[in-house]
Every structure is written in C-alpha cells, then in structure tokens.
Length: 611
Ligand code: BG6
Image (tube, rainbow, N blue to C red; front, side, top):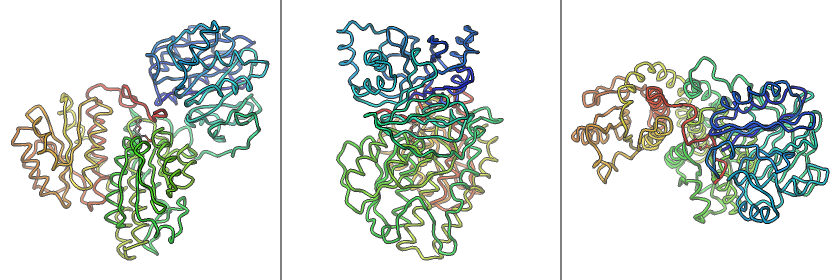
C-alpha cells in the first residue's frame, strides 16, 4: 500500500528520504510528503502526485537540501481520504512537534477522533492515520518511545509507522503490527523503511520487526522493545541483493527489464535444487522428511492475483505428477469461509512480496487449524516467510514493476520442482523423475528463444493497441496461463481483458464476440489443441479477430488466424512458461503503444498490505 522511510545520521535527511521514496514508489504513488527535524525545528513538505512532484516542491526550500538531522517520509496509496496535500503524510499534532508516517489501516479511528475532538483537538485531514500524532502528543511525558507505545495501545488495526519529534532531535521511533518494517543498520547512520529496496544504497544489514515490536533509533543506536516496553532481541539479517538490482539499467521500464531477466531468475530458482542421481528435486527450506511428505493427503494453495494463477498451475502439477488432491483458494475467501483442514493437509501460501494481507491471514488460519504450512515467497524475511516457518524462496531478486512477471514464472518453476519431489516420493520412477527434471532445466533456453521474438510480438501488439476488450482462451495448463495473460493486459493497458477456459465461451461470453472484440487463443501443440482449433473457428464465425500462440513450425492454426506468436515446442507441463513470457511481452507492448504508465499502473500497488 504505502511506502515509508526514516533516516537519522550525518547526511542531509531530505535528499536521503526522497531517494528512498523513489525506491518505494511502486507501493503507492498518489501523494507524498516528508518531515525533517533539525535544530529542534520541524520542517514539513507535502504534495499530490509522484515523488518527483514532492522533490520539486522540496526544491523550493533550498535549506532543506542541507539540513542534517533526522526525518521521515511517505508515499501514499489512499485508503481513507482522497489524494490531497492535507491527506498526504506526515501528519502532525496541533503543536507541530510530533510527525507521523503510517502504512496500514486504523479501524477504530472514528471513535478515537470523536474522543480527541471532544477534548478540543482539531483535525486537518480525513485520514485514519492523523489520530496517531494527536494521541502521541497527549501521552508525551519526555520520552518519545513511551508516548508512541501508549498511543499504539489505543489503536485497532494495522500499522507500520515512523515518528519524529522536534523535542527529540536525532531520534526516530518506529513500530509494526501487520504492516512491514525493516531497520537498516549503517555506519554512523540508521534507517527504517517498509522494505529493503529503500535501504540497499546504505546498508545490507537489516532487522525485520515482528508484530508488536517498537524501536527508538538514533544515528548510532537501536533500542528494540515490545509494546510492553520490554527489551527484545531480533536477528540481524544480511541482504544478498544489491542496489543495482533494484534499478532499471538500460531498459525503459522495470517490467521489460524483469521480463528479460527471466532466463537468469529461473536458473536461480532451479540452481542446486535438482538431484539427477535420485531423479528428484531438493527443496531444503521445506524441512519435510520423506515420511512427512508421504503422509500429505491433500494440498490447498492460497494466494492473490498472479500468485493465485501460479497456484492454479500447481494444482495441475500436484494432481497429475504427484497424484495428490489439490485445490486453489483466493486467499481472502480462504480466511473467511472456514475451510476443512485435516492434520495431513499441506497448505501452500504463495506470495511474491510475502506481505499481502489476505495471504498472511490465510497462513494464520491454516496454522490455527493445524495444517502443515510451507510458503513460496520472493522477499526474504517477509511476514509470510517468517510466519509460515518453512518454505522456498524464489531467488528472483527485487520485482519492482507492479505487474508480476519474473516472480510468477519462478513461482511456477518452484511448483514444478515441488511436484517432482512429491511425485518421486510417491509414484514417479527415477527415470520419469529425471525426464521431468531435464524438461525443467530446459526452461531458461525456451524462454530465451521467446525473448528473441520480442520485435515480432511488438508489431502484433501495436496492431491491437486500439482495442477496448479482449478474450484470452486456453485449456488444461493453458487455462490458468490465459487468466494470467489477461490479467497482465488488464493491469498495465486498462483494456478489459478476460481469461476463460475455452470450453466456457459457449456458455455465455461468446455473445460478446464481433469484429471489434479480439481473442487471444493459446493453441500450443499439446493435448487439447484440436479442441482449441474448434474454439478458434467458433470465434472466427463471429468475425472476432484471433491472435494465436502456436508451437513453432505448427501450420495447423496459422491459416485460421490474423496473427500468430510462435513459442518453441515443449511438454504440456512446461508450455505455460514460454507462453506466459510471450503474453507478458504482448501486454507490455500494447501498454507502451497506449502510452500507459507501465511500471506504476493507475489504482494498483505492488503488495496490498491491508484487507
Ligand atoms: C497485487 C500485485 O497487488 O498483488 C500483483 O499488483 C500480485 O502483481 C498480487 O500478483 C499478489 O501479490 P503477492 O506479493 O502476494 O504475490
């Protein structure tokens, strides 16, 4: 949702904060603000729009560029109160001595607001967050950490916050409950942020806060406690990403860079995880013995957005390769519908960020019901990774673009490896296991050959950039692939694209088809192709233009469609990966042709940390 950062050290705080916000902008970008404390004075700047707008407004206060000290900043994804300068963070108390940036939702804010207003407090904004500085001011008796703790105890809801006060120059207080907070340990400086991307230029030594943690940070000290003011110990983790990885390089967009990174990121996801000796996969983070694996009699996968689509491919893999009954849940539904979980049910939460609130809640529901929980995450040390206690990291590196690409393909590859492990644990022979392992190891090469098609895919995409509706159809493993392809186009080009199982068209959606309504058909040369050919003819009979993804050299479909995108031949389990990359490129080039903000699509955010 929102991105927050705090800094205390010898550097001028405002430039550090603004650079940090730029690295957090994918979390929310409708307004931004910062507050710096120097010489016991509070300086505040806020603006509507992107961080660049804030930088411009801050530029009109040249002294800000030089003021060393401490400060906090925020880039917003509005929940309460429309994007405006008044609703932008930081929020200050009436005296202007306490400033707060908040990521999360305060559920009892109206009650608190009424109570504070009855005591004569005047509010400036419509936000839930503004209650916090007023509560801190009311509780302050000379120690900022205690005042913040007292304020937080009155809140219901979620928060990741950072607080500064002109009464305590050089100090930043931070706390978390439900929204991510990471402390960055520097040389003569310390930072706090919503995620590590903003910390990388300064340090790779970090401390992840747990729910209920609070900390007072100065340039050379971190005083970590729980909300009951009892000191707590937290592990200092070393980050293996570098700042460069979180930068665009020579690509016009992070999304295109991340699409082209997939051969390497998939090699990272596979590296050290295939044992050809045994014809199986090695997933150390699982901590499940072969005996425990053999006891699993049902799998439930939970996730949101692209992660849920990856889960749907996992369902095919676990049932077909390992013979285990599997279902996929939209995480928000899983948490509320009281699911049946037995002791030998394995629950797999999938989340790139590891911070999606609905998926976190699904982990807690599954854990409470005694399931074996093992997560697939990309962000090391994220909430889902830590609360699941076991799982597999994707090693895809930072994914900055809001629309998921490389994380999705790595999720699918890890699910294939997991299905291989469970398959060998049950009914696959060593040679069958090795056959699948060989196919998995060929995926990076298959994707390299699709990436070479980018110029052709660009030409086709530009021919469809003026369309307002699009259907994606597929069968078998290509059905979730169609859903993911449609989601990509929706996310970044704002075209109303819908993915359907091809057999579903006749039961309604086909009524929408005409010459203005194109269809993208996944007609790879795998089982089900003959049926898709029938569906393509149904669409053509309604004059709908058809773009088909076909297997290179397969002429069967070419004559029936306006445009074809070729992918290399591969098995039905592997086909979703090269096909997805082709669909990612198609969506990317359509969005660019429509002049859309590819990396930061309107109304979206990289991880939805509130319900
Ligand atoms: C959305 C992102 O907010 O959350 C999508 O824009 C993503 O790209 C979805 O697929 C789920 O996020 P995560 O981090 O739980 O995989």
